[in-house]
Length: 178
Image 1 (cartoon, rainbow, N blue to C red):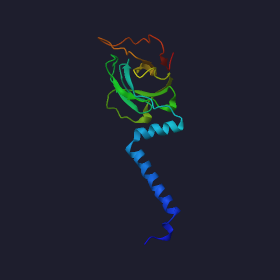
Image 2 (cartoon, rainbow, N blue to C red):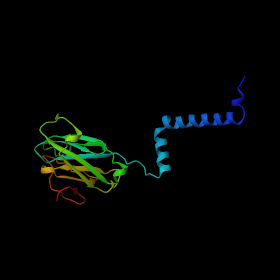
Image 3 (tube, rainbow, N blue to C red):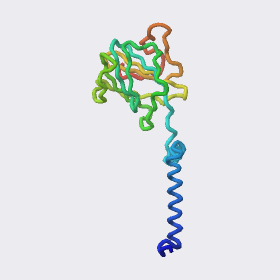
Image 4 (spheres, rainbow, N blue to C red):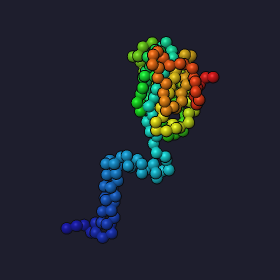
């Protein structure tokens, strides 16, 4: 025999709450991409940015440990400036940064130097416009004495032999030093 407490309107409310909880759980755990998209629409946010392929270049005789926020950590061997080193879809710009790319790096003697996030010697935040298209790649160049440069392009520079020219030819380069 049922208790008098679970009869009538309270029973319908509890049944409705149980159905809503089951649907919410199914949405959150069964369809995370659709749920994220729905929540972004509700909050007025734009779509999450697409991952960007990165072409890093090292124009120094030292290795470089670097961090491009949020989340891209890499190492460039000394003199690696051929354009053949590619990080496919390695960088996803943060929505909150609105075109700013925070970069931290240090020059190291070897690839397996300790990677402690607080030991980056250099840092810069470059103001880049959003990637012009889904086909855009981020070209990231490291120079001696703490200079860094970046820009979005659709055709990265790749050297047939040797390294690409270290000069910042072409438009849209952003750098931390003149």
